[in-house]
Length: 141
Image 1 (cartoon, rainbow, N blue to C red):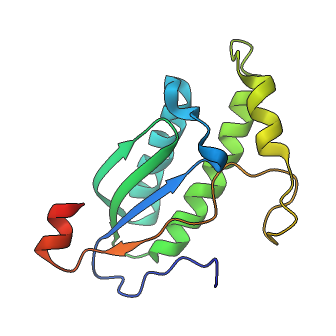
Image 2: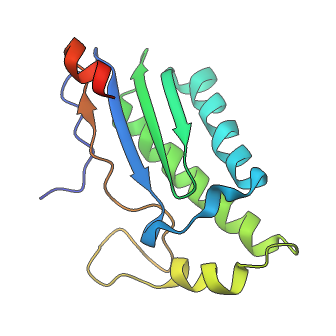
């Protein structure tokens, strides 16, 4: 199965859920959450991201999103790429991060099965976009 993000109808909002590898609870620190929020604001301002709702959990993120212009898969790709680099830098340089010796090896393990991972990976590859096409699905999400 393809690892590409599947957004079949760019005119509808989608629910997405994506997680940190091995469900590491990165987002218990406010500075790491702020990296996510800054990136979402950037995508809203510069990439046409429409955010209907969002929720940051300790190890993953839920979004209900749409787009004004840029395809959603491109926005998501750029968001995950940017936040991955920034989170890694922040964790590595944070002298107060007591879990650094535990977290970084998890992210630095190359996954030989995945062609798009080189030396490190923070986000899991999947995000399972669900098109919000009816009231029942919208109410559920």
